[in-house]
Length: 483
Ligand code: ADP
Ligand code: MG
Image 1 (tube, rainbow, N blue to C red):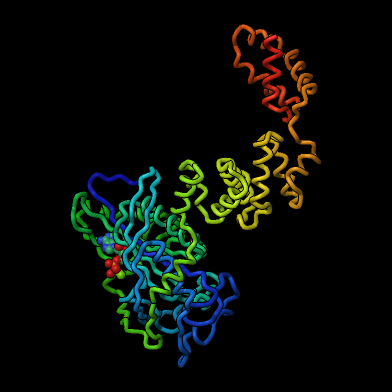
Image 2 (cartoon, rainbow, N blue to C red):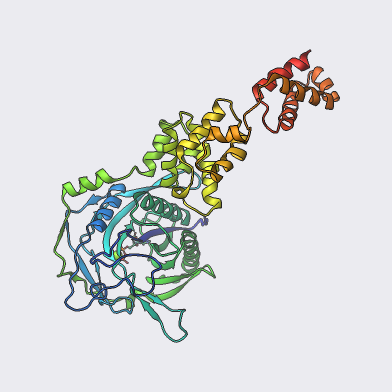
C-alpha cells in the first residue's frame, strides 16, 4: 500500500453483478455467455414498440438473498425508472433501473486485510437493473459490430459508502463480494468475462481533514488487481496535483491496463441528463415479509458462518478454516468428508492437499472430482488404523483410486500389496542390514547420540519400500541397539 504523510485516499466502489438467472430481467430470452451473437434476443429485449416487460421472480430472489447476506434492509414497495440515453448498445434508448427505490439499503460487508485486521465496509444500496448489449470494436476494421445477447440481462448494482482508505481495502472487498456471490449462487463472479464489474470513485484529502475532496470515477477495470492498481495510480496522480495547487475536477477516467495508468474520458460537466422517469410498463413490485422469509429459508450457509463452525466444531486453526471456506464447493466437500470420519484435521489436510491439488492441476472444479468424500474418509481410516502410512496413501493409493474409481481403498491396498509390514522376521532382517551398513553410526549411538535413531528408522523404511511399520520398527531397533 502506498504511503503518504500528507494526504489520505478516499474510495467508494460501484459494483455491477450479473445475476445467474436462466432468463433476462424483464423477458424470457435465455442468458448465456459466449453464445453466437444475436441469438439470445427477442422483440422485448430489442425494445420493439408495443412490447411489454415483466418481472423476473428469480432475479428478485437473488437480489433479496444478496441483501440479506449483507445485512441490508429489504424494501417492500419497489418501483423502476427509465434512465434515458442514446447509445448503440442500448436498443430501447433507455435502461430500466431503480433510481429512488433500491431494493436493498444499508448493511455492509466485513473484509479481512493482508495483515489480518478486519474492517466493516458500509453499503449505501443495492438496486436492480438491466444490462446493455455489447459493441465489438476489434472484429471488423471499419465497423463496430453489435451483439445484443447481453441486452436486458439482470444486474444488481452494489454501491458502497466512501469507506475505503487504500487499494488493498478495495481489493479485499472485491474478493469478499466475489466469494459471497459465488456462495449464494447469484453470480458467477467472473471479472474477466464481465459478470462482475467494478468502478472506483477516488479522491484525496489532507490527512486529518474532515471533508472529502472531489472524486474522480475510474471505469473499465477487469480484474481485482487492476482495481487496486488504478486506485494507487490515481492516489499518486491526485497527490501530485494537490501539491502543485491544481484543482481536481470531477471526471470519468478509463484505466489502461497495459500502462497501469488512467486517462480522462469525459468531464462531469458534460454529463448526460438521463431524464429519469418512472417506468410506466412495470407494475410496482411488492416484496412481502413472507417472500423474504422464503428466500431466507433457501439461503445456504455463508462463508463467515462456515468459518466459525470449522473453528469451533471441527477445531481447525484459522489458516485451515480460511482456506476451506474460500469456495463453497471446497467447504461442502470437507463437510461431507467429516460426516464419515472424526479425524477433522486429516479431513482438512486431504481436502486442502490432494483434493484441491487435483482440481488445480486439472484446471477443473471440485464438483468434477472423481472420488467421493467417503473414499477420502476411508483413506484417512486406513492411515489411522496403521494399515498404511500417509506417504503410501498419498503417493500410491490415491492415484490408483483416481485411475479406477470403482475400487475401494482396501482392495487397492490388498491388490498392490501396500499394507505396512509388522512382521517381526522381515523387519529384523532390514534392521540387521542397516546396522551392518552403518557401524560408525551405531558406535555413536551407543556413546549417547540417541537421536541417530531417526536415521536408522529412515533407512529401514527405505529398504522396505515404505512398508515398514514405524512403531514396530522403532521398538525392534531400540532393542537391537541397546543389546
Ligand atoms: P454521483 O452523484 O457522482 O453518482 P454518489 O454520491 O452517488 O456520486 O456516489 C457514488 C460513489 O462514489 C459511491 O460509491 C460513493 O461512496 C463514492 N463517493 C462519493 N463521494 C466520494 C468522494 N469524495 N471520494 C471518493 N468516493 C466518493
Ligand atoms: Mg450516484
